[in-house]
Image 1 (cartoon, rainbow, N blue to C red):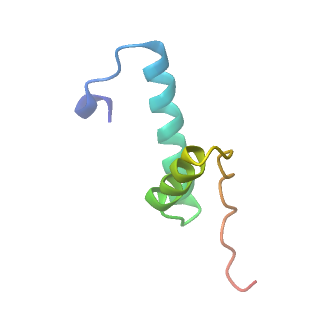
Image 2 (tube, one colour):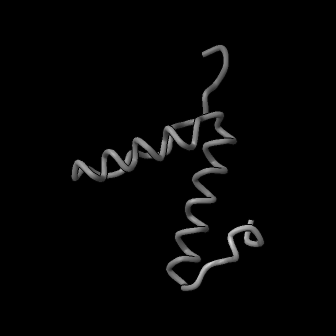
Image 3 (cartoon, rainbow, N blue to C red):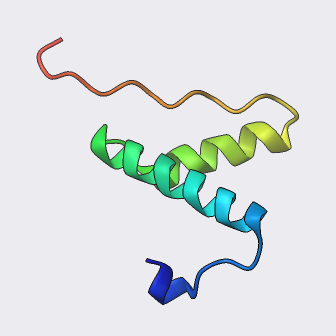
Length: 62
């Protein structure tokens, strides 16, 4: 991924990139759309509310 993005320019950028990659990976592992989750986070933060927690993994048969 760093090859295609050419890395980051600052320590803050590196931290943001790592956090975003982690959220995306976690959403995928939990079978949740990363885009939908990030849309929800952005909407909540723009409204002045705290960001929602990552949804729990969906368990089949429950």
